[in-house]
Image (cartoon, rainbow, N blue to C red; front, side, top):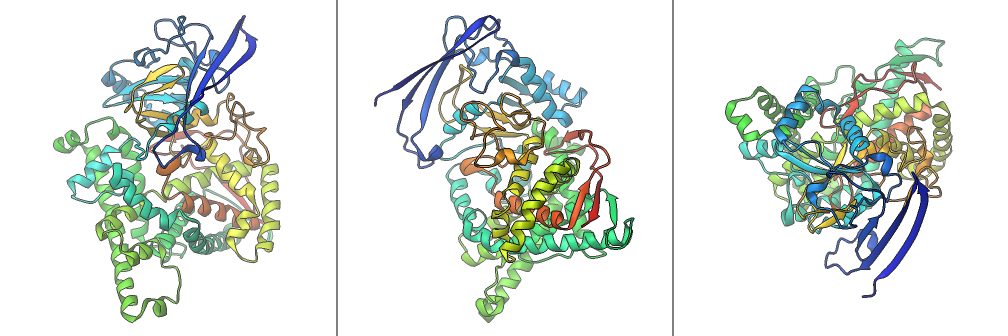
Length: 563
């Protein structure tokens, strides 16, 4: 094949000239999973951009723009050992993390470290080692080398729980061909357009019911004249109830009554168990879980107990679903069900392509991952819309036009209001639920002109990516319109359209519950904006903390005023 060459000259900065020389050689790939539908390309890039001293970089000041490649004086690709790092001893670093409470501020820690060391660095904490990156071109190169069976970091505490309890693992914890086979079957029920059309009405009715409940509460507890009352409140408990109710409706095909005046204590315990599981996961990631199990560490006991309760809750729901399906089949399923959508669980059981144990494992993972990961971004969304009234009005205007025209069809309503999707993407840019996306390249690659051996865990760090002035114009401005297909003025750098919105991951290993979560959040925001004006008492930035997910230190208080 013929290589194509390109030489470009950059502006004079800091009294030297940066010269980028990129040689791209097209190559075929046997994988059926190709990036953007074209043959993969390997790029070898070198830049005369100053020097590195003793393996330490110049920092971000020497890394402006999204395509920077650092090199040594001799122009060679630098070794893995020369990548800037935060310290060679994983155990000393772990002690620092504990002492300085970095686990809860992991997103800020990565941002500060990129500022100090530049757009790539190594970190060794406890038993975990990684190379961390944050620029879109590097992230693109990483995903080009993920292979047919992409791997991300195994959450070993979760895996140890399944192994010690002799439970099957879902796709979140699997790798290789076994992962791929199960994932393709799940995709048919949760990712493809046909099932999405079928479960959207279930999400829509839960969103409507939530707003009716909220209207009644505002009318009952709010201030002002009747019909125009307003109520200032912490909506987070109600958002968690909404997320669980919506997830259960889609996954199990039934409502569990969380909007009633006396919701079940069992459902609240499930929410508490999910929160405890998420909070205890990060510190266990850097310690040997089997050792924690052997010594009976309280941290492990709390973690395992939380998972036990999550599985117990799912088991009860799955048993009910199995009995319902068996009863329907005995009477003739179509007549009994009236042709209605029976939920993800019902669809998997009817088709029988996964064993009951694998169905249980994957349904439990979907439920455990579908509450906090939607309820928390909704808190951030309400806050940002409340402190940006002009943005709120633009989104509401679009929704008010789209909803009547859709004639009650939620899919058409969302298609007619793209700013709703832009709002979710903008919220997840500023407040990514998971702060990193990990991959293990199947071949040696070059990132920032450093050699990365195959099999190295590389993390794309989403919090500094989303707030980088090198990637986004005015990164701290909340602007859902920056994600419009007709404009890229809110983004910067070469190839501005790609690898900037990665909150749900990418490719074959992206979040399996993505379609449920995206539509769930958009539909709730749509109905809230149709019924309420949102405001906040303070426009100061929210302080955030990191468990396994990013969340506010203190849930924001939102004022809901009836329209």
